Image 1: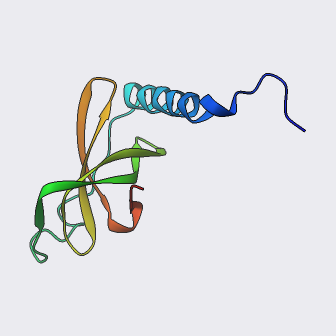
Image 2: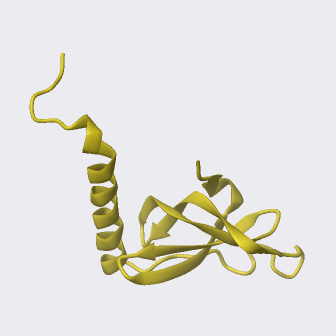
Length: 105
């Protein structure tokens, strides 16, 4: 039975708007966290830079809050990925664990 007042055709659009607002609020309240050079084993593992970054969905942290964002994987090694994503009109970059990243559909 359909629920009165729902719009299936635009549900994804409004879900994305709400998610964007949540991420923007988190970014205003807490700093973006990134893995340290030691965590990503910078001195041991070589990195790969992609001339054509791939779309992804990744878990990031703003202070104590974890959330998923749509972004681009621009650099990686065996344990971590360097991603870029946008919050509002601000471009953000951070390193996250490789298993926190999934390819975008």
